[in-house]
Image (cartoon, rainbow, N blue to C red; front, side, top):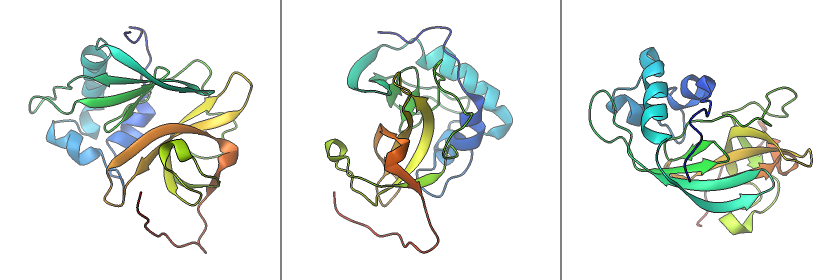
Length: 188
């Protein structure tokens, strides 16, 4: 399966997440090595459309927020050759090790419970992904399921900032971090 050629790529994810330095799971250093920085975000947008959209995607998991796919392709940056190879796709959304958001017609930023690209905590276990209540996750997309349930695509990092998984969770399974909480580490 190929992504639709008219898939829209959200520029806010480029400049508000991918090209912006992050405390955990930072993609900006990797992308800068390939020649992508804030000043040429439009080049990254162009290259994603030209180099990633045409690549075949393989169907993975499905949940009420959408179908997930994996795509293995290479992004050739302005400074040097391949800038990565493993990408995950969720219902027209490129997410994974080096991700960019493709908007889905049901996605909206109006009335979101949480702000995108922030850390929140899980309020329940997600055993299919080895995630537990209390794990910290980053919100990378907002979804509204066909039944009206609000949810988010979440990215989960290990203690050193590598992506463990990208999946979706309903908004009711997430809560904001509080100043009276402390972070801890656990073994997967």
